[in-house]
Image 1 (tube, one colour):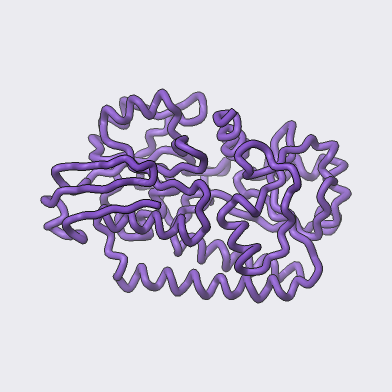
Image 2: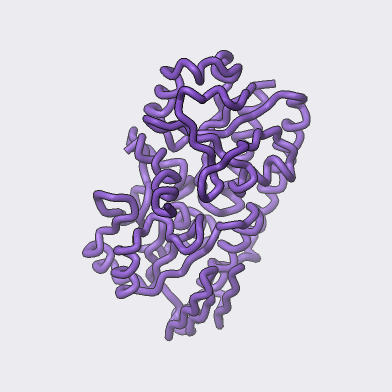
Length: 331
């Protein structure tokens, strides 16, 4: 069932086509010669004779590590890069997709072009996990093969708050040589705080209006769960965004799947839609008659939501600024 859940969690993209770590050095020339020792969120101890200089990274995580100053170490990525129009996917905001080597394989979810990956000679593979021990955009078969090329470092988001997952990414980045005390990184924290305050203010101004977050697939309508999704939880519990919590979430807890005939189960004045669905997904919403009975649909009150964003303070600062801008238009 876990695999079914993960496939559903990633399915919308197909419509458009407590860590601890240590390092002997903070970066620079010494980093290349120092050893690397890190225990990731899966409890895996990774010990290398030298600091990793060639990273193969899941695309959203690659964008986050780039925000933290490690872009020069990333030799390849896997996972979403471009949307159906050929533009950078919202999941990799801030990443220059024209400069990365994509080793995503064809076929089923989580496939990797292992020959291309081997050609990059990675020292380390980096990805995240949303549920238990499952790797984001790496299926079990490919995980076994990748581990023969390089160790896999995992940053887990399972059960984490938004601040916790951002901190977890930064801990891994620091172990890899990122300077978290740099002016650039500190500025991203300030930007995050200011953007959060904007969302807090606009949430208060919405009064008794309700917001529903969700996504679309051919046969199902997914209502996202703010109790489990770190970003939605942060916005609801910390910033006061009036998000509806579904009453009967599926396994994993991230959403409740409904047939389109039951799309009116939860009322909504504003609909926060998973922007991975692209134009194809929006067309599904528009053609489903029951969904169109919601006030949000009647009034065209659709607000994009990047449900899978780079786990960096900068990415979420940008995302919350956009959210505040869009919600201000709905007041």
